[in-house]
Length: 230
Ligand code: MN
Image 1 (cartoon, protein in one colour):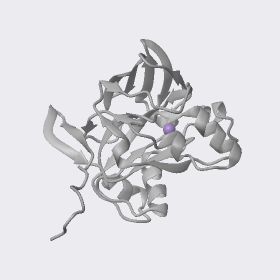
Image 2 (tube, helix red, strand yellow):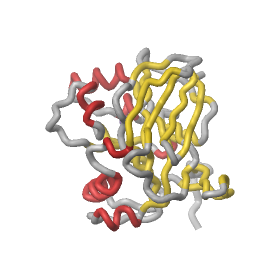
Image 3 (cartoon, protein in one colour):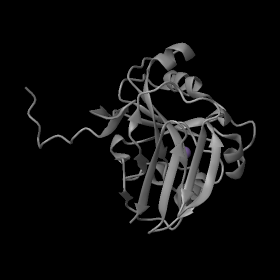
Image 4 (tube, protein in one colour):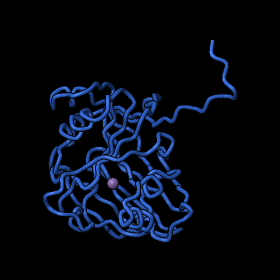
């Protein structure tokens, strides 16, 4: 019997939806991996070279804000950006997965926003410093319920609006690494497991938001989330 020095933290969870809606089941989050520059047009808007492959970074599990209606505007930034992303939720894992094994490890899909302190990211890039302060801050990962479903088709729209004005529009098929490749490549670097979430990257159109803005993110056939920055 383990004796904790103080009560252990609760495991972060995300509600699960089956075809009929809410299921009463929650998904326990283990890790959050994110893909950077997985859409060519976004890579260009961030000043990237067209030959640079996508790459991974991470957020802590407790960065998620499940089914938010509000999310806090974080400290230490004056340039908070939205990035709408398809999120893959895993029910299995392993290392060095084939694309087929990768798809078999999928539990379901969700819609997430990779909130980014762009000013801190620019400073980190300029100095060759790590990205945690820019990407892995508190409440930096608002996420919809996870839907148990097959992979969304390549034509599924990935969109985000701010105060009713569309800012981002892409489709799942625009990803440089597709869903199976994202999972397989992650499994070359980490042993994946049930409970892992992977944010798969954002299309072009990222931009700043301020307190009071209402953000609506949607992946067609997967879900929608709407929250206000407070
Ligand atoms: Mn992102």
